[in-house]
Length: 160
Image 1 (tube, rainbow, N blue to C red):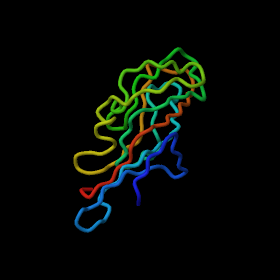
Image 2 (image 1 turned 30 degrees about the vertical axis):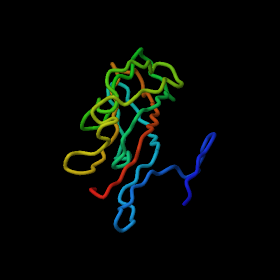
Image 3 (image 1 turned 180 degrees about the vertical axis):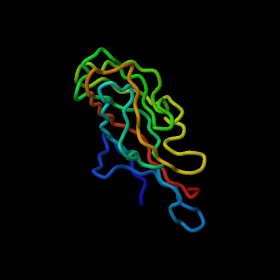
Image 4 (image 1 turned 90 degrees about the horizontal axis):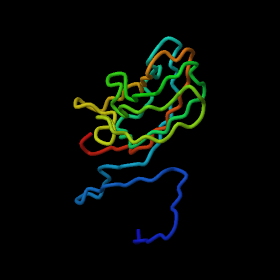
């Protein structure tokens, strides 16, 4: 393939991949792909946490940031504070204060927790995904539905 320089936006219907080839055999040894992952989580009336019913976030996915939108508002004045996993509830985003008592877009938050930008959803023992979980500041006073869209990098390597 020839070297090509682009001037302007580059678009693709199927995403972009950065690959690494083995210099001796020419085979692809690792890839990195820009990816999004969307999940909808309900925090039930009387609860302060909500999580996915099953693991949905991709294995080897490193989230860089997440957008938050509320589709069903809380009746009480509560805020979304943490986004993480079942095992570490503030592992992606720690200590925000986004109001969830009104519907609409609440913002884009960089993933600054231990699982964001530095470890993805992998554990030291291997690539194990976990359910996404969030924490609100108090009883929402009614079922509250929050949509999270993660932007990140999906990675595979010859070491996995």
